Length: 82
Image 1 (tube, rainbow, N blue to C red):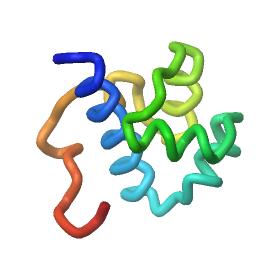
Image 2 (image 1 turned 180 degrees about the vertical axis):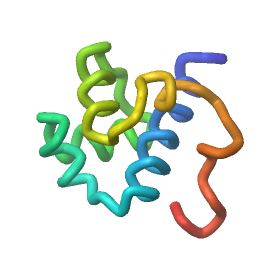
Image 3 (image 1 turned 60 degrees about the vertical axis):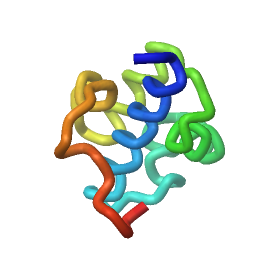
Image 4 (image 1 turned 90 degrees about the vertical axis):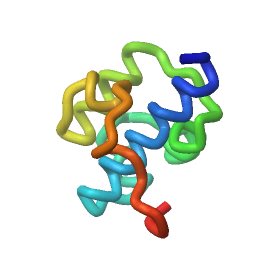
């Protein structure tokens, strides 16, 4: 997987988990201690994150870090929800 596709998968996983939890980007950002704009950039695949930010996002979303970086069918967006 290339760096760009890794960022896209990561961003889609963050977005899908956030939406499944009915959380706003602002709420996730507050829980993770990052700016809302960073969450938006991550979800759009436009930002490389540190391991620290990865851990913070996993904590905020109540999931494991592996859930945010793995490619799985169940984490792909449902058409019309993104």
